[in-house]
Amino acid sequence: MQFYIEAFDEKGYGLAYPYEHEQAIRAQQHTLQHLKPVRIPFTLPGEVVNAEATRRREKGLQVYRQTDIHRPHTARVQARCPHFGSCGGCMLQHMSYAEELRYKRVRVQQAVMRAGFSENLVEDVLGMKDPWMYRNKMEFTFAPDGTLGLNRMGDFRTVEPLSTCYIAQPEIVHVMKTIAQWAKAFGLSGYDKQQHTGFLRHIMVRKSVRGDLLLALFATEAPLFSTGIRRPDVQALLQQLEALEDLKTVVWYVFGGRADRVGFDERYILKGEAFIEDELLGFRYRLQPETFFQTNAMQAERLLQVALAYADVRPSMQVIDLFSGVGTFTLPLARQAEMAYGIEIVQRSVEEAVRNAERNNVPNVRFFAGDVRRSLDAVLAASGRSPDRIVLDPPRSGAGGKVMRKIGRSGVPRVVYVSCQPETWAEDLKELKAFGYVLKRVQPIDMFPQTPHVELVSLLEKEA
Image (tube, rainbow, N blue to C red; front, side, top):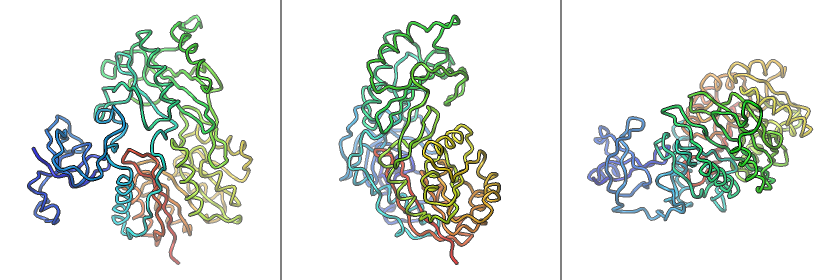
């Protein structure tokens, strides 16, 4: 069956309609509102493709598989990775990078308009000179037969074995291959998510700006026998890893739960000190395997620079950083302010943030552990006055209406909102708009080339 691709959805799938409706769609005829689109991955808006139905449905829409491109987009390019099309790691390698940046700006503009502001406020996306091999953290999953790779697109029960990965830094890929060869050599099983059996779950590899590597391996059993002696296969792995001079830390986690999440019951430090140090704009941060930190160091610095410029903090000001994590924004803000406060729900991140403040000699900062919605009132009371700036970088789901209304009622003159999801960000902006806040600037930043994700920094000011 032949389809016309009208647009992208938020996952980078093409939203497609039967080809005979192309002209009506282009004319924006409302008579087509009853038509339901289908989703066809690895297509581009404006293309005409042949596709066949699959058994998959996502968000109530049938997923089709492209079989032939009848009319390709001029921005279509040959994908670089041999795993493109089956691995779920990248979705946009078939699009030129210039077109990818244009698409991401349009996505942010559409979100801005939904919030009731002008699309002209959105700047051109800050892209990368070389949009490859940028990720400094990757997680790889074991299949039940012990092969190592990434989940296949749309199928979290099937693993695509990897020979390479063009968005991960090469040293990370090298560690992944070493682990894969070790598991195969010893015939080790992976965790079967349906049968709940198997030994190896997944690995996480992180690389710091200085080049230090950290490896975390998650398994269902300990790396030691009950006698305290290391298993022979684990001992052999550590001997192989000795050849990797930059690998400073190896941590073995035991997790016996059935849930498909990052958790652990026991932790064994097999090498190093359970953490590595990273840097961002001259600040040093101690990172453990479970610590959240930006995965694209070069673009993270640009994002932080934009956020600091938008905040425009003066020495007499008090600043509150919501969803503060390990202090990535809080510490640079405090360096410019009289006092900075950070709120973070993850206790371990708060503990690390306190250490990071001490390590970087930033005394004028306090961190609060708790839910942002409940803790903001306590921070406002502790500060003794209305804040001069509020900065927030919430998770993909957004800050939520209750948090945004608390910000609005605080009367803070300037808000800097950092977001990785334009759609939820736009919903949050509507809440602030009701309190007299006006969107002044929006700077999209491409943190994740070859994927549909786009980060942004926005500035809102309260009208007098």
